[in-house]
Length: 208
Image 1 (cartoon, rainbow, N blue to C red):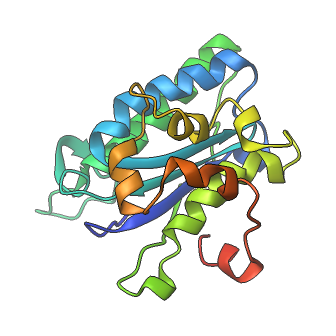
Image 2: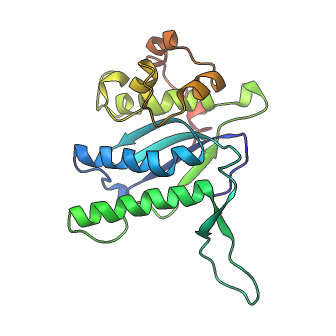
């Protein structure tokens, strides 16, 4: 995954054949622990949402994100006298998140094989032009996803997004709340308005 420093990205993946990746509540907590261990240290995590068969992350790429990881080897066809590229810290962390979560779920439920689609997707949402910067819209989309999907009637009712972490300014959040609030120009007083906003169709196309 090629990322540009100081830019914001929507990162997302889903289960193979759109199948579930979370089977019970403990699975969500398990994934969040992995998120805290492998993603939060390697970028500025701005928002997340865990849905039954997919997940969304909004990240800000910092200097550490794009730094080559000392143990992260990039799988590739080796050419003579050519060393394989190293994964960046973020790509390594993402790989560890998905592989370790899959390993744990497979063991718990006596299953085998891949749990996620092969390639995690990313879409840059930031831009030098404010008119073309869709990061705040993506933040809103991510938190409203459970409501849009009909799982809840309001974002704060859904347990596995960062919405309530921002709303309550939780210090134990896996997100960098102060940084996200400053970067996206968010205030707690706005949250009651954010949860009622509908994402325009043309904007939705810009964040995927």
